[in-house]
Amino acid sequence: MAEQILDKAAKDGPADKVGAVSEVTSTTAAGERIPTVIADDVHIVYRVNGGPRGKGSATAALSRMVRRKNAPGMREVHAVRGVTFVAYRGESIGLIGSNGSGKSTLLKAVAGLLPTERGKVYTDGQPSLLGVNAALMSDLTGERNVILGGLAMGMSREQIRERYQGIVDFSGINEKGDFITLPMRTYSSGMAARLRFSIAAAKDHDVLMIDEALATGDRKFQKRSEARIRELRKDAGTVFLVSHNNKSIRDTCDRVLWLEKGELLMDGPTDEVIKAYEKETGK
Amino acid sequence: MSTVSEITHDSAVAVSPTSPDDGLSPAELARKHGLEVSGARVGLGDYVRQMWGRRHFILAFSQAKLTAQYSQAKLGQLWQVATPLLNAAVYFFIFGLLLGGRGGLENEQYIPFLVTGVFVFTFTQNSAMAGVRAISGNLGLVRALHFPRASLPISFSLQQLQQLLFSMIVLLVVLLGFGHFPDLSWLLIVPVLLLQFVFNTGVALIMARMGSKTPDLAQLLPFVLRTWMYASGVMYPLEHMLNKAGAHSWVSDVLLANPAAVYMDLMRYALIDGLPQALPPHVWALALGWAVLVGVGGFVYFWKAEEQYGRG
Image (cartoon, rainbow over all chains, first blue to last red; front, side, top):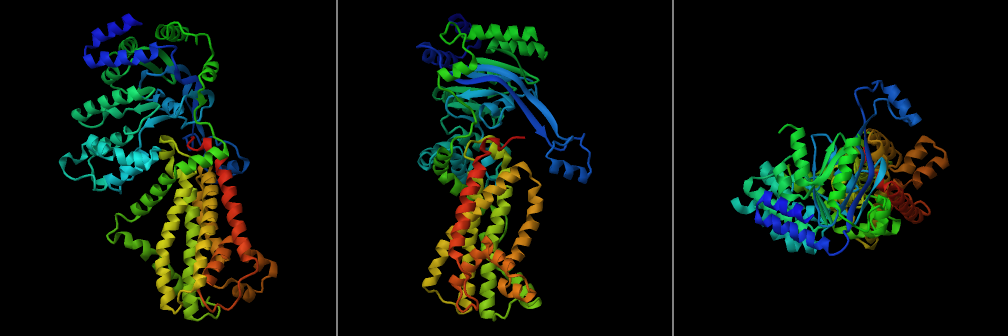
């Protein structure tokens, strides 16, 4: 284990990374490692209405509803097939795999937002997806959205009042004038994404899950958000990161799960898995 | 397949060195460290406590929806008042002037009677319509964040209550304009509104669960609600119309006991002087009964499917 870290540090280079890793391991080295998320043979099936196979007649649809039968047009998509893993406190775990391999679905199941078909997910505390997009309203000002988003994530009014200025400063929305008092629909897509990330990252999470959120904003903001994620990781028990950017996975994660077609193909230290993944995808 | 399991097994060993937890099944490991199943439904008492913890969100969400509704319009929030006023004007034109549904009431009584009825019924109607889409129309939110799902329908019916309070401004002007001045009986509108709000929230919760399973209800519901509106005497004195049609007495008993008619009657008799018929018997008991039955029943019914919202 120790060689592994040294090895990795030598390869990765940046000094802050070494600090982060040793800090994380020191919390776990004290005693036994504490699991925060346990996925036990998780299967997730989406049922999609109105697939092309469905017979279109209205009377047929009605009789199916009356008989409470699943429509033949109802298609099942088996998105995650029997994934098992244990995540420990202090770990930062990357999820990689091609599009549609079930990464986001798995995260939603860990968060308890999608019921599993078979198997169970056990968690310590409430895992939360980093994302408040759905709670925000484009017709409202950025100011009100900060408050609304904070409340939606379960922060108290006092917490939001304390962190309000921090959120606005972090997003950098006001760098080019007083934009926070304008409705969000007037923001550029980059500005809106920055504000969303800032709101989402303002809360302390037990288990934090980030779904491709690092791709937003300009280079400067990306750097700042990576730093923020490292910070969150220090406070949070465990961080999950979905990304197609292998570099940001290398920079932030020390363990990687590789999903393909809903199955866990590989689970191990970042370098090992990413190397295998890059070989497989011919990069 | 075998190579896959080998890889995962190897790396699992590499990541976790010797640990007392080795050899435990995932379920045993979870039990040992006190981990809980993610997304499981909590008990009713805890659920109510969670809802209470989210009260600021519920309020903020309803106000945000209310503000966002007219933010693109030039007249802005003025529409909060203008919309109900125009509604009342249309119904006056059709039922008061064209169809003669006023049942012998003079303008001084009929117009406040009509406006009160329209506003009170719209409150229930819109709560039901908002409820049916509360989950199915906010799946993104349900799939992204954790909160007791009942927050959504409750928030929507709270939005309707705030909308109604705007309408009350119009109603006040109409009442004063036709010579009905405030007296002590006006205070009765507070308990009436409270009971109706509880009833509407129950309706919204029931509709939300049904609509989350069968979104088609959103297409069907307007017809049901329109039938309900005509059967409750929003635009005409119900008893007068029933007598005119020669209906059986049990028909009029049933129709007069329906919740929409009950809340409308209570509101009208609290605000308007000199209405010809007296209030039907037991009307306060009915108002309370409906509120408790539908409010509590709806909440429990909604909670029963808590872990299933967002599926699909």
